[in-house]
Amino acid sequence: MKVSTILAKKGNKLITIAPEQPVKEAVALLSQHNIGAIVVLDEMDALIGILSERDVVRQLTHRDDLLNQPVKELMTAKVITCVPQDDLMSVAHVMTERRFRHMPVVEQGKLLGIISIGDVLKAQRDYYHGQIDTLETQILATE
Amino acid sequence: MSQVGSDTNPLRVAIVGAGPAGFYTAERLFKENNLHITIDMYDRLPTPFGLVRNGVAPDHQKIKSVTKVFDRLAAKPNFRFFGNVELGSDVTVADLRQHYHQIVYTTGAQTDRYLDIPGMDLKNSHPATEFVAWYNGHPDFRNYEFDLSQESVAVIGVGNVAVDVARILCRTREELLETDIADYALEALSNSNVKEVYMIGRRGPAQAAFTPPEAKELGELVGADTIVLPEEARLDPLSQASLADADRGTMRNIEIIQELSEREPAGKPKRLILRFLVSPTELIGNEAGEVVAMRMAKNELYQTDSGTLRSRTTDQVEEIPVGLVFRSIGYMGVPLPGVPFHERWGVILNEKGRVLNPESNEPVLGEYTAGWIKRGPSGVIGTNKPDAAETAECMLEDVAAGKCLTPAHPELDAITQLVQQKKPTYVSYEDWLRLDELETAAGTEQGRPRVKFTEVDKMLAALGKTAVH
Image (tube, rainbow over the protein chains, first blue to last red):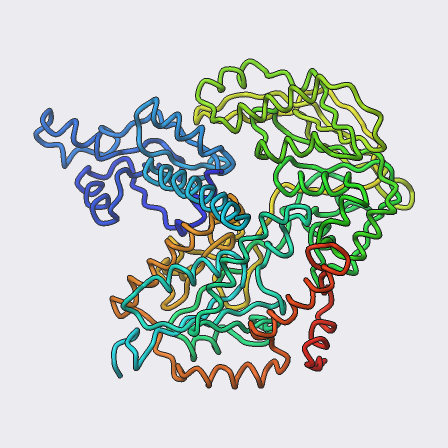
């Protein structure tokens, strides 16, 4: 199973934000679209970071003026990305081991979308359900 | 008008495409107890079941037994089948929108992904899916020709389709006689000159996409020795390290492949050679434009940040003489007339099965998709069940919220009249059951599961319908 299987049924809407925008706008977008992380793109549309709800929560008690800070102050700049052909199982392994929950999907420098650990788990669950169903059908048919 | 889904105003659903995704969508919708619903399923072929009939290999009859589940759904009084009716040429999306509250596209992935290397368009180089459709008796492909006088064949890919094609090429006449392979394919394959079949995988044994039973089957062919080069069966350090969290299937695949690499050939008439860690770089042709050889580069694996082992070519190259090439690097969907398409993924533009308008990215009222044309080709037949359920649940949610079409003619008879007028030779489920009976009866005579009709005209003639050209 590939990363593309998940992206194929997520439409092609990209929710992104610029590094200079304030954190409160990022939070508004997260809430409005019911998502857990937002990709940060520079003016050339190059991916330069990711801002997750965790990044915001962690800083909440440290900074009084957090919501007015620019996104680039809080974002994670070293982003691990994947390509559409990547194996879903390996991606799931890396997300679990390294404890992050969102991974942008990029091809030739261009952002195509983002997958979450929830997407990956759902895809894995459906994959196993499908296999079980197919095996059950075959067993019942030979009875 | 009373609420949609009540007994006086039942929910009218059209499902376009009678493969597993279509039937599983119907199954999920029928499970909704408090909803009155009638489903019409369309297919461009007179026969239902999509790739179960035309894709699943003829020597895998057990997998085809899922059709019994579909038969039970089709027997429901609120289900109708309109076979031999094509979207676009016979009925249009606009027609459907006037007769149904909801439309679901489950047309699957009907074509092959192209492998862009020099020589791919030479004579005797084909998409593997065309060969599959041909030996399965798909009416659109029965007249295709494959040059089985060649001795050496390359199958590019190690997925399900590649494994099927390689295995079918190696089967003996006696083995094929027990299947429902198309009659003409049985003759052509029985008289084939093929001696060597290469299966070409980009990555190593630990990344192979086939399942252990499929791998095992390749090692148990009556008429062919299966050969794996010992150096390609050995795992590279990265693959070795990845085994720490590999599933049982992967471990078993590796065991089977390594066992094959230790075998002495038994001198069977054919040889099936599984190659790993090589990428075709060019097909070489003769003056007549026919394939005579394939150039390949040896690959090495490297690990990306995202954890995947990817392959890259080295400067080590080799050439193998082959006269026939099948490429099988994945199926791909084709656009439907009047339905938004996502070119990059080869699917209908959608979110969880709701078709999206490409400009606004908002759902198109009343239109949905499920199966391979929704998510791309992945998984086994059963994978379409949770996928179709996701779509069906979006449909039910939308009906409950009052978000569905308001058709001008929701009555059952209205659409029957339209189909009758546009395609008088449409095929009902009762008609199909009659064809099924004729096919299995002809099979019983020959000791085979069935003998397939492979021409639409002959199907219609057997049903006493006259083809209108």
